[in-house]
Amino acid sequence: MSKIKILLVEDDPNLGDILKDYLGVKGFDVILCRDGEEGWNKYKKDYYQLCLLDVMMPIKDGFTLGKEIRKVEENIPIIYLTAKNMKEDVIQGFRIGADDYITKPFSMEELLMRINAILRRTNQQGEKTILKSYKFGNFILHYDKQLLEGPQGTNKLTSKENELLRLLASSLNENVSRSFALKQIWGDDSYFNARSMDVYLSKIRKLLKTDESVQIITLHGEGFKLVAN
Image (tube, rainbow, N blue to C red; front, side, top):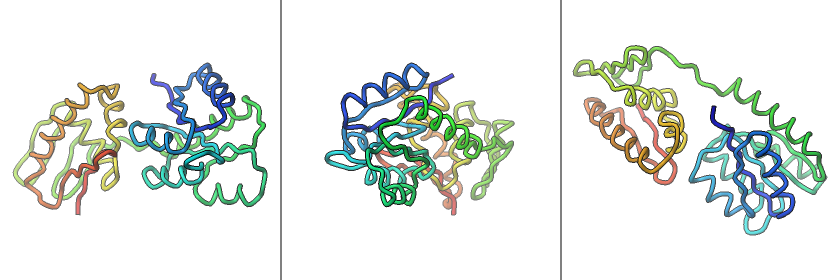
């Protein structure tokens, strides 16, 4: 089972290292960044299941980073870490979409409990049910049979085509990150798997050409999405 991946952005070198090591021991895969700009660049290039963001940071503060992340993925859990204890800051954090807010100094055990509570809640609410069929435009994907029914007949899909199209159809008109798709279907986001996925996407696009209202749009640096009018 793959580890939960956490983006940790903390400019205090001692605290950052301690948090990374502690959460690593607890079974998480933690990527540590020292400022908001580095955090944003890391976030854009990979898939994370939770973000721990310090509020007061150089170059780009945690609130600004949180807003940028929310524009890309509105449902990713965000916990803010801060030395401040002002009511206004707490309100601002929740206003821009914080799932939790913990004030320094805090115990590692308390942080771990909050992380696990949020992950349990978001997993229960966020998992998409795998259906037997998906309709988009004039197509029906019969996922259970690996068949794509369209305007000009029915095509048998390979297992990878079937999984990739189901992932896109289950997030219809929503962005799907490349890293997420690769890890869900291929197991990792290596260069060779990415090239393989591009080949399958090209094949799927050809199958969808018979309906002009349906297309797969590539969002450079972010991923792609299946769009149906």
